[in-house]
Image 1: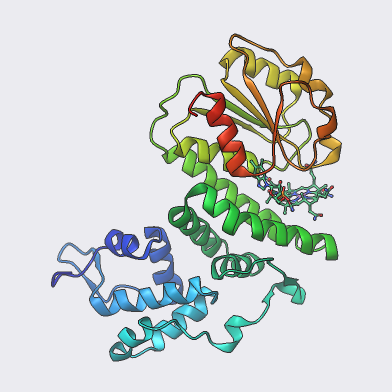
Image 2: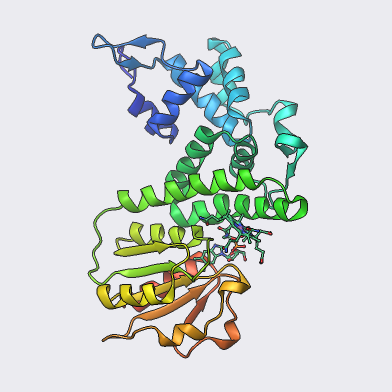
Length: 314
Ligand code: B12
């Protein structure tokens, strides 16, 4: 770091967070750069950076952002280095159960620091922090790792909580929107595809649970495979039109609910030369009645592998 200090982008890269997250932390919690360049740009000196590193560490260990900022700001400059060296001891209130309005508790099955932090932000309905944590998970673990280790466990925890209480639908909607936005952004930001025939991804008719479809599409896009995502509730007639228009190499269809998982109409989908590989996933399908040739997958890596195989990659 030179005497002029680091830019927002440089500090964001160092911490593995989005530049917008740093700006939000500055605005919301008063933790930011202590100087500006001659041109008026924000510049972070070594103490600013160490404070932000401490805040980031505390969040990853499960502390709510405002509390992490408070602790980082209260740490004397001379103590920052030692605070960063050993594992950070969490304040007692940051290690308690994840709670939301009305005292609702959220059990996240394998509560890692990242899942706990995301669950906390979701229960607090703190949209900016949710977006930052989802973006961080994607940047740190890639699409498959972020989905399996952070996003799906928190979604499943929220689903279980909702089932038990009938509450937190607002939390489910907020988190789903943030995850959908982040996965769509991953698809948009991926390097150009190296394949020509796309993979077509859709939910079964009336099926609104589209996040796994976007997770798979983002993972395929990261592997530079062309995708077309039709999202939620796609009537079979519309899917058939899309198949005829796009001539996909593979089609993935998701069903979460038994009511949307009747496989009989799949047999009537148009073929093509060569015929697209039909891959189905999700707990809703009646797998015993799948048409010949359909491949069922039970997790994201297997779905990815099945589609790579359909494209002749291995
Ligand atoms: C987010 C969410 C919503 C959002 C969806 C937003 C969106 N754009 O996707 C909204 C608010 C729209 C919604 C609506 C409803 N939902 Co909802 N929802 C969820 C929630 C919390 C996450 C959904 C999700 O993304 N699941 C995907 C992953 C995270 O979970 P999973 O499928 O269990 O994962 C397993 C496997 O599928 C596999 N897997 C995971 N990821 C992937 C990826 C791929 C590619 C593959 C192949 C496999 C795979 O691994 C997991 C472990 O086995 C789930 C909870 C849950 N457990 O899923 C409830 C859940 C699916 N919803 C449920 C219900 C009841 C509903 C509603 C009927 C509520 C209502 N009364 O209106 C409606 C249904 C609307 C419809 N017709 O589709 C129930 C379904 C119960 C059932 N089996 O019948 C669940 C399970 C919640 C619960 N525990 O009660 N929901």
